[in-house]
Amino acid sequence: MDKSIEKIREEFISELNSASTSTQIEQLKIKFLGKKGPIVALMRSLKDCSKEERPKVGQLINSLKEEVATSCHKGFEDLLLREEKVKLESQKIDVTMPGKKSNKGRSHPIRQILNHILSIFKEMGFSIQYSPNIDSEHYNFESLNFEDDHPARDMQDTFYLSKEMLLRTHTSNIQARLMQKEKPPIRVVCPGKAFRNENISARSHVFFHQVEGFYIDENVTFADLISTLNSFFNKFFGQKIKMRFRSSYFPFVEPGLEADIECLVCSTKGCAICKNTGWLEVVGAGMIHPNVLKAGRVDPEKYTGYAWGLGVERLQMLLNNIPDIRMFTENDERFLSQF
Ligand code: FA5
Image 1 (cartoon, rainbow, N blue to C red):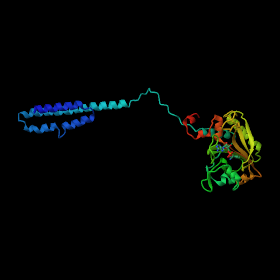
Image 2 (image 1 turned 60 degrees about the vertical axis):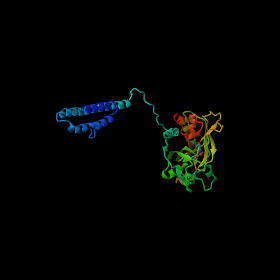
Image 3 (image 1 turned 120 degrees about the vertical axis):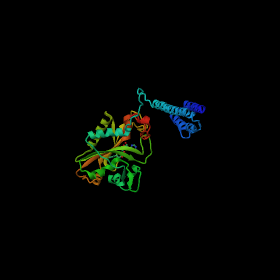
Image 4 (image 1 turned 90 degrees about the horizontal axis):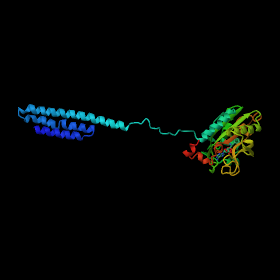
């Protein structure tokens, strides 16, 4: 009997020494002290011992039982502690390590230039209003004196959504709508997107931004328009820049003009942006046609007004020497992060 007790102890000690996790120790405890384990079996076999031997053997079994329980408890605690330590080690943070650089978000270069443009016009006394990207033929064309089947409608290739609805081809769709809502004097700018089914090139896109502006009051003159555009562009570029005005046709103004700015991208030497002319067209403008005032329920006998629509991408291109309008929509971080 003594020998079997000793054998069980040796077996236990060897298994205890090779246990490397707290779970293994738990399993070891169940194996040796559980109901089907060798120590309970020893207890059961006590009845086979002689009366004299029984107390001594009983004591030996009890002390083995206690030894197994204590060793398991201690081994379990030790391993648990070691496991916890390893886990903590792996989670250790070196507070002296330099931080990782995170990229800050920023506004798109078109948003930045729009803010710049709007802040100048605000300073000049214009308020900001908005008109919808999806609009009716009426506000995009009809109210602007484009007659039905007038060839002028082909000037701006249109994305139609239905027979009546379209993606606005210019921000001029605000004009009659706002006149119907407000009484003169009206002095507003309207920033927004414009969509045209055109060929994409270095200077033109199917999707671009404009800032419309108009001023309606008594005695507004063509000279007011020219001086407003001049002072805006000088403030925008922060220097006196060369502009040239060419007479032009838009059904909604009379007289109409287009203004070009000297090409700052190539310093007027000639490039793809200015089509080798040294000039870039940035704005269409003119005196608001009496028919447009009538469509906006403004009395053309009493009031006059001027209006313009300028191209936002082209101004950003001139200001920062950007050679291709497509760069604004390519989403290339190397380009965007420069602004
Ligand atoms: C117009 O859109 C008129 N609505 C402007 C206007 C308003 C005239 C009020 C008179 C009174 P135009 O098509 O020329 O005009 O466009 C105005 C400006 O938008 C251009 O000078 C140019 O800078 C820009 N632009 C026009 N088409 C494109 C395009 N496809 N891609 C990028 N910019 C463009």
